[in-house]
Amino acid sequence: MYPVEKEPPTVVPAGQVTILMPYGSLFYAAAPVFSAQLPEVTDATRHAVIILVLRGQKEVGSTFLNVLMRYAEQLREQESKLILAGVESYVLTQMERTGIVRSIGWGNVFPASEGIGEAFLQAVEAAEQWIAAQREGERVQNTADQNLLSATEGD
Image 1 (cartoon, one colour):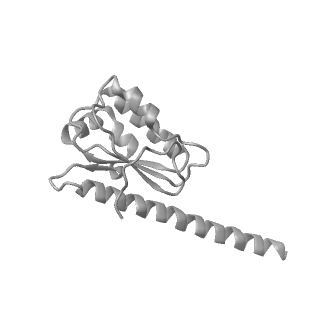
Image 2: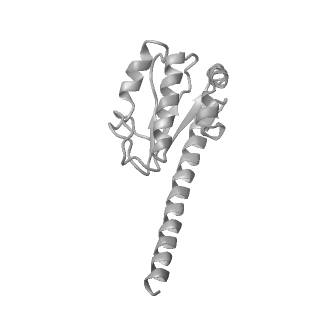
């Protein structure tokens, strides 16, 4: 199945991978416009992954990096995450210097490579595995809760 290009959702859908691919500059003045177009993180957003494809973005501003950091934190607060794919080397250096990579997590950053789409496919695989692990963890927790309930009902 291939991604379909369309307007981003208004709200981050729970339990799904959403891929966002910004076009044009992500420098200073464009950051607020980009931020306003991001899907909203709500209380219903759980176990969701936003993949932001940055391939071809040779330069981003500090305002954009701050937008990323805030968005990653909003997602984390709702048991969700931000993954960056196709991050160009200069942008990755900016992110390292500003601590953004540490905030987002190295495992959630897939640098650009010579293979077009390689980082993107790695990011999608990681996102799908993470969501599956969250579902499995929920299933195990629900079973444990039911067992606890059953053990206490008979006492």
